[in-house]
Amino acid sequence: MSKRLPLIAGNWKMNNNHLEAIALVQKLAFALNDKDYDAAEVVVLPPFTDLRSVQTLVDGDKLRIGYGAQDLSAHDKGAYTGEISGAMLAKLDCAYVLVGHSERREYHNEDDALVNAKIKAAFKNDIVPLLCVGEGLDVRKSGRQVEHVLSQLDGALKEIPVEQAERIVVAYEPVWAIGTGEVATPADAQEVCSAIRARLAELYSADVADKVRVLYGGSVKGDNAPGIMAERDVDGALVGGACLKADEFVKVIRYGEAS
Ligand SMILES: O=C(CO)COP(=O)(O)O
Image (cartoon, rainbow, N blue to C red; front, side, top):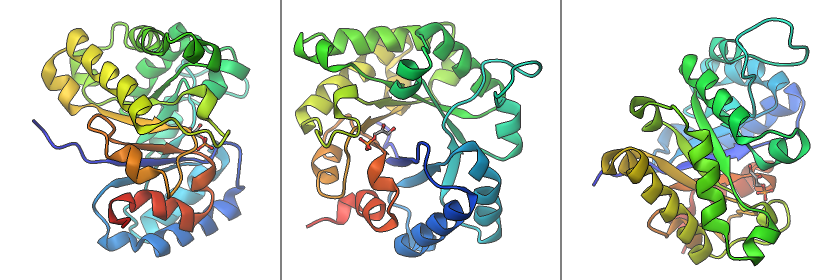
């Protein structure tokens, strides 16, 4: 069994201009003691307008903090006003890109077919997609969360070859737990994360299932991270609100040191 390196990713959503971005990444690097920290991979996902500043800072200070974008276009280039291509993100050395976040699905009508096209666009540019899946409250109340999430996973991975699938990161983010302060219990997170891993084994192989990192997201904070991260199939966290303060994000990142 391979040991998966935990991944703690901070989704800034629509927060911080490029100057605030520099300040936050500097604070984070300092609070984390970036050069000495290697127990987890740390990634920030700022708005597009911040990426060049974050790249310059990470390169200049040789930070180990990785970065990526919150979305990308399914198209290569051309008359798509307002869109950002995978090639543009690759030129900024983005390692990751979020795909299918519930806020994109809800406010921009992104469906599984578009999510699938965006995953293909990311891989075409050698950027690792961080695929978000998760059920709303109505589905959770009806007890169909596993079925719902696996259907999103199947749709997202359509025609994705094994050598790409094994690099993907999947984030289970129950919509009812996002920004609500209502965190899923560790058992809730484990139930769905283990089902995602089992489906990857069915779709590809046990080896792929063993390699893919499955994260939990939804009201993760310093105090609840240790319990969630202790679950067998949870390999990290996708953090929203708590990643906007360097000290709180560092508490999540250093979850393993909590007493
Ligand atoms: O949507 C999220 C991360 O992508 C989670 O947001 P919160 O941590 O603010 O609930």
